[in-house]
Image: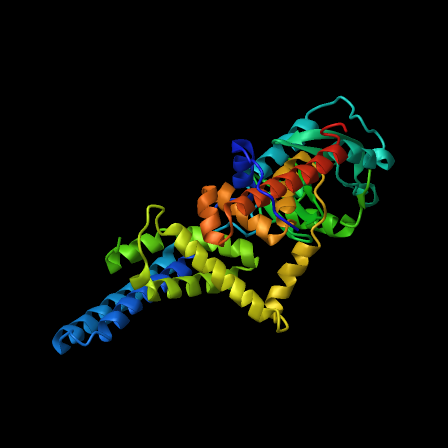
Length: 239
Length: 177
């Protein structure tokens, strides 16, 4: 196909959107070290092939190069061992998200007004509001009472929230976007106890599904939340 | 203008990150990108004596080496089956199975996906323009193509992106047709 020249005005909005979406990745430190070493060898090679260089000078240069490269390599190894981990491509769950889930759960636990959805059977309809499937975990089979469901904000993310109680204990089942965490891939699980609240969840498709529990007497622990998650994780429903 | 060897290396190393980013874009593989960049520097250091510092600096010269190495490798690899280590298969499969994003939070990912679905020559030109901030004439120099072709590729790339993002926005109800 012929490629005709056309006018293409500068477009700062497109540039900044692409910069944000594609990012500015730096070269790996190992590659930088190899290339710097390559530069050093290249200099060494150039000097070695010079017939005019005196032997003594060459010898001193070679010794200096070996010492510099040796110490450089050692320094690099030490730096590699001590530098903080790089999380760019790893599965990273921000603490702010745990905190936001607990806040939303606690807020629901302390309110008495009914939710928009009052039956478990219709909880999947929340999917049309959040534009992704909903984790409709039927915890009633495990003795929990369904109290209602609604779309609420978890931090900045609109999430489906199903709320259950059993005695003094309560559970929220959240359906969040997987983009809330970094590096999420299908089937990744996590569990933790954050500020005393047991939390467990997994990612599937573009959703991040979580169970957050609380109980004044700490009878609801992370093992029980993990068990509930394992039992019900297949109950993802399209709205 | 000829420059000292040390100055040449220092100037060349300043552009390592940029070369790596472009190599990642061209190869879509971190290991191959590292190989490509290393080969580029090897050739650049070997040819240091021939380098003549022009007003536009060393950057287009390095980019051109990288581009040439990539093209010649591509031609060589076309004749051979591609071999992929087992450990690379799983991440590749995961990427391939990624579901379509369907919410506002995925706007950046949608743009990234639309960008990566374009032909490589469009991606390369747009990467150099948007991410590395190269002028059209530097892009033309780096890719060894006429200035008009650079403008044409950028125009077409921009058109494709806007079409794909429009589809996404209409589908999600962000805008009406």
